[in-house]
Image (cartoon, rainbow, N blue to C red; front, side, top):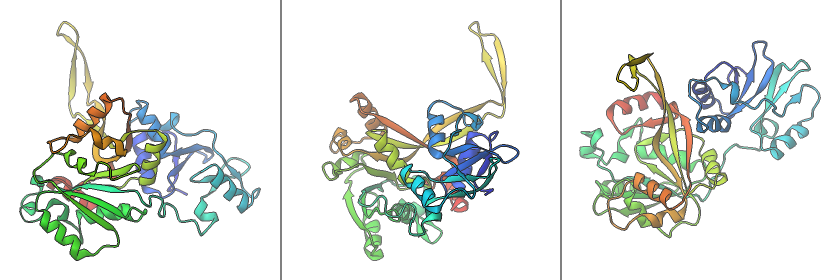
Length: 349
């Protein structure tokens, strides 16, 4: 119970980290006497962040204060199962007659045949941008293509693929350029239980130019990911967020809070000191390199031209397309594209 109960005075950032640690995708918000105040999901936090809340704000305006609850000894398992399925709930808190939290139920706990997230993304394509030189990881990348740089017993790209394949994604499309023959040979020797397709960049085309090779190949929204980032997000929630929001492109953004370790000077209009901010905090949403895209977006990409993902997003916006942002906790983003982050990745994984 301690893993999913939080008090209302924790920050949005702390709540995101707590959600990352629990498998239930939902927290129970309680008061000092352990009475239930409400429930808090990752969707609740995303909505609050996207409305402009600072990560340092507490969760008092974020949680659902009117959740579905069950009263101890006054429900059947079938009733609980019915509520979980029909209301599409991650969990239902169980309280006593004094509203004290005593337990919680999930669909898996009331029906052992239910396996969360199993094969829920079956048939969804995944594109991996694997053509870069990886200069920030030299000297490893003087010998190996960046996707094959090892993290523990496996290369980076296998960590990325495993997170998709366990959810049913079995078709992977790799755009390649630098040391492409080594990468192709690795997969031929690997003989995986998923399908892989290679598309050659004969010259570097930027972070999105090679996506044009895939125009006309997909009939549903698909994932696009860099080959040097491992994202520990809920991919089912991401895909659902993209579809329910009717987005054309959804990018995954890491919530980062930066603290300036000095007092910053604010000036007035005449160049005089207005006030000093002591160690101010700034919130940013950082692009992680993981996206969900609609097939129609690919036609916006020019053929055989150097073209970045930022160009695609800007052109999509100018064409009236809708761009979504899916916030995740900073700890859920593992960037292994440079040595300092590579060392952190070893600790996180």
